[in-house]
Image (cartoon, rainbow, N blue to C red; front, side, top):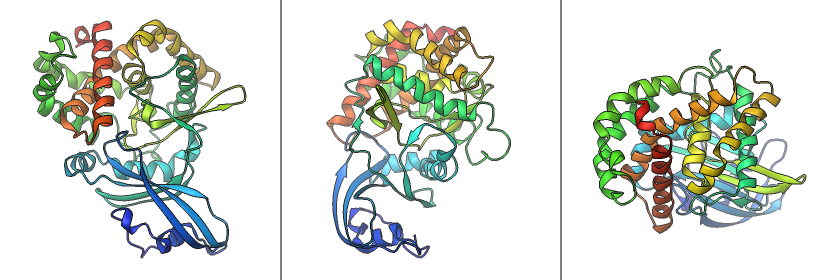
Length: 361
């Protein structure tokens, strides 16, 4: 892309000439004949606006369609993205790390951030895949495939994130991420407890002082060895599925929250927030064992199932910060967004109680 080309601010800026500047190279110049643009993903996320662009060409051959990701227009959510540096982190992941893991991610045509609140991504269109649905939850075969996909991510970086080449990626703690999670939990806990008074146990509604007092130690723990790259928002709405070689292939998008820390954070976030509670209760131990065995098959040693399960319980406790902030501090912009947030809160609260997580404070 021509460095002088301005970043688009909204869908009106995604013109024929703009796509030509993005997709053309000196060796393969393109002339875009038409662009058909439509918003997608409404209600699936909070921080960005997504568009699918269907392209035709007067000269050359480019992708038939792409997905364009831009900052949200919601000022409340955009300020959260600025505070957590979400946009730059996603751009840097695609530029620096996506190629280093066998986890399937979208091909990237453009990744650029000009400020903490201005960015653009032009990505492979995965619409031929089936997108996950956080409201509906996840089947057991898909959950098993997810464990394998997470092993692809975590094993690729296992205990290899502290040599300097990953310093663009924040630590789980201390960092802008842990500071923001602590401040956001402190600021939003009462509102969260009011919003979801009928969905969470009294012990959780009344736990703010106790939780905040214990949170620094929990955050320090999640940053300790074994360390790897964590996706940070690993939930069904950010996953795509398709049949592959007799099984299920998983692709992962939305890399706005990666950090360095314990990989079990992604496992806990997925199982406690995206899997229906009854299924989680029945299968969580087997799914965690599958992840551990997949790590072992990819070369990870000295990390067993018992340790992983105890780490999983503690990670659920740390991730209560996400539940409080998403449930009490972000603006749901439509009914679909409200539904996935409510589903996540109910499932996470059940996991907190099932594993007696407050006792670990």
